[in-house]
Each structure stands twice: as structure tokens, then as C-alpha cells.
Image 1: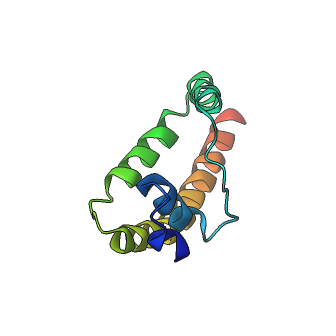
Image 2: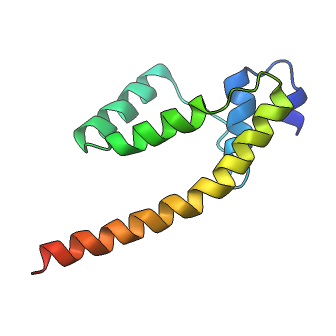
Length: 101
């Protein structure tokens, strides 16, 4: 909650705190060079679905009030993470079945 009230943090940093609070907090958001490396990694491995999900998740936060936006981020994270993990496991099982015929 401190991040929501901290005027020195950007909206991105405050909401990132809400997104990562259920998991270990990553304080450093990374440099521009690191972001380029992450984008390159995602592109090389064709992880377009991860980018799409992330962009839609962040884009679904329409609240301008930090507290409301943080609440949205927490609820979204708590609901989506188990769902995405389950979908990944189902997809892995299907891929394994197709590859082991």
C-alpha cells in the first residue's frame, strides 16, 4: 500500500508493486537495454501469446486512481496466474501427446 501513496513512484512502478506483491517483489524495473533484451528473447522464442496477455492485462486497468488501479492489478494477478498456469499445463500435455504418437 505504501507504493500507492508514494508520489515519487510513477504509475507504472506503483501498479507493478501491486502486480508483483503476491509474488516476490522486483524493485528494479530494468534498464532500456534490459527491456530490449527481454523483447528480443520473447521474439526469438515466439512468445507472442505472453506479450498479448500482458498487454491486455495492463490495458484492462482503466482506473486512474492509484488505489483502484492497484486493486484491479492485484485481483487480475490473483485470478489470472492460476488460470494461465492451468492452461499452460493443458497445452503441455496436448503438445506432448501430439509429439509422442
